[in-house]
Image (cartoon, rainbow over all chains, first blue to last red; front, side, top):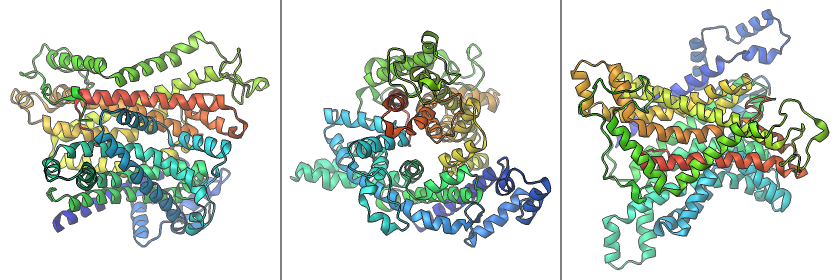
Length: 315
Length: 323
């Protein structure tokens, strides 16, 4: 078990290094470059060169990567020339807000998905099953931004139930103090996630319903509700751990869109704003944070699965 | 979905020709799977394909929608002539009328014509990106799985690394750099979506390379290239087709997202996402005819390809992990 964890963690570290190398090289190969973006279109070639030299941008790219990486390990993510602030402090300011939004969405998604997925499996091929499957397809095929727009249009502009803009408070607690502003952003993420979760849960429950232990439970006189919710659901939630871990990148990508539509002051909105003005250090930092979150999500999914399911062999 | 009766596992996967490398096999030399294998499995695959459409109503709906949209976007403009080049501000933001069945947009383009025109970009990019991604991913995955060992390890670690790179974030940055036309957009989107295919096909390739008919090829002196292109890739056809179908839906959604942020194909060209983007400027004005048609078009096309992919997966019984 320990060996499995160590090997899996080592793999994750290697992939993280690869991710940072890929992201770094990608963003440094872009035309224009930092000097042009900072100094503006009228800077002379000499000015560009001296800027590049001052910030070490004229060194070979692998050497630059080495310097950047060692800085990174010291907690220095670089400096945003556009916002005049260190990238680490920018992310520290925005990341908690994005996490709050995503965690809320994740929790609500699971709570909503469980009864739907279980109901679909128990009453499979019923009208309920087919309509849920169909709706799942619809939401899965709807771009998040369009879904968000519809939510704003119907529930904010037409019905006036919720504000069209997310809370603008500067602290996490300030954002949570305005729950009505969070309803629509969270709903847009939830609708996307629920369609995924129910599909997995449905097939997991179906797989479990035909197992021997279900027959045993019925044989000893357990009620249907008890069998489904005490025995089958517990076992069906094990694969959900994997899906939760893997859904992290989907959520973060979704929140890139959602934050933009609802003007939610998180990392996604910051990314969009800085992408338009070519603020590379900030873009690099955020991309890296999301990439590492993805790797960590995968790792947690694997480890969680191994911990919960004793049948998994730690090979 | 394991519950549909027609997806029963009784029918064995076609293993290709029993004696591999028979010279009478007529097939294109490329790794494109259709027609690459011998007659036996091709007929089997074809029959199963027909069965899917006979028995699965969702597949029929999906296929119907795809055909409908292809006709609408590519044949439609031949029947319904509109000016999509010069703007006419005198007729901007007009509600639907006899002259403009879906009204006009903010620059006076006819919205129905615009829908066809924008749909061309969306469909072209979606389909081309999916094909490119499937092709690259198939070859990459087949080579990794076939060669195995250190090469496989290195190739797949690269895929792992790229998979963890948040594609949407990087695409957003890339499309602010280039002012993308359709061609660049295809390249950008495909550059991230081939990874899934590489993983899936590598798995298939690992399983297929130890089969007798592949070993027979090698015993008879066939090279690795021949084994990969003529025997491994064609037998992974089911996986590839399913992947490609789902990827069309994903690519169209990705393009629409970039278009919505104003970073998709650039004016005067447009795509459905770009149309939605300009419609949102007037979201308070109640110009519903600018908002709902492109939105519905994106959703319907994506649903259509997802239906198709789902039905095809049932037919080929491919185990896709991510869906």
